[in-house]
Figure 1: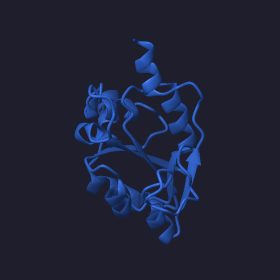
Figure 2: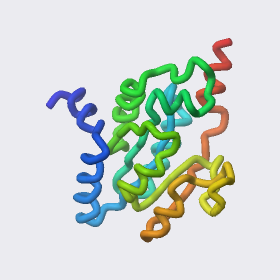
Figure 3: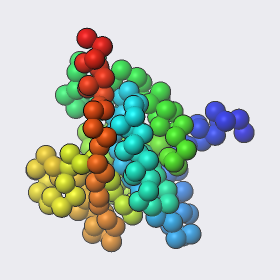
Length: 170
């Protein structure tokens, strides 16, 4: 298997992700899950994903599809990179085990299907927030907690965001 084929092997369907998760859990491994657009991969993303991987044995990253990024009220030209390019860049990170795409506005159905042990989001969210209408609520947290999982946040690296990078170009 070439190195590029190895990266592509990390890009999986939802069904394949679930199959691998079941196998990992049978070995006693803790599976972490996070999601995002990851439009222009930058140091802030690397910091966030590396820190997320520290919470367990395996890290799964769900990437918003091109269509779902457009529905998130980002700038008109977003996403800059295609979902396949974004997924491959995330897969290139050694601490990422699986990458999959989701087309919905939130990953709720995917989280319920995959049942990760640990759900992670950035510190602009609040792991203790229970009101699903609050903007700080982490989608899927009630479901993960209901089956014994946990929810945590990861601090951002100050000064790094896709929006800031795009504004520097102007």
